Image: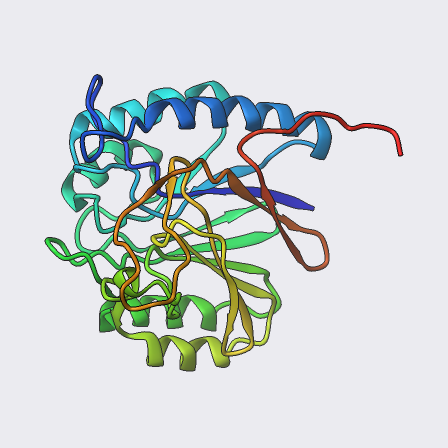
Length: 266
């Protein structure tokens, strides 16, 4: 049994700063750390935290230091991929001591946590909102999956390999590599889930027969409005996180940011 928490899109900035002059992003993450400590009393020990991109909103060294400081009370291993707001060089510097990131090039990596192999793919195209899966990254994935047989896999990337229906986010979605990704995943017959972020909403779909799950943002969301004239912008809304529980199969449970009042007897 392996329990892994997925957090996404914290969009941290430096002390005293706000995202888009209005969104304070550190407090929701601080509250979430308390929530994670709380749920361990209910679901058991957590083995690791995975982070599906946009740790930072501005790519600053200060924002990454703040992230590590806020999560440090949990004393859990953290494995992350960059999002479109991250800066690859700052990201690498911030997490180099953890030992799982390559020293150069794309930030593609793999780690084993309990019974689960986690593969992280770098979709960052610096200076762009949209992402890419370049041939190097796709080859990294393919060669790693070829070495596995029945090992359960969590494949993590920032940009979703599907259209969300939120038009302004789909315009900065995954622009290259999606077809080849599907071919590679279609050749893997073990248990595998794909997890991602970017769209600040929990959406579940499938790619090549495997479940694809996007995580909510800790601090904001985008209105799910599929009309072409939908307002462009974010909502101040804390989305919580996702618990991926492996025990002879994956269960993925969204955990709300606040516990709620109760439980009350029937």
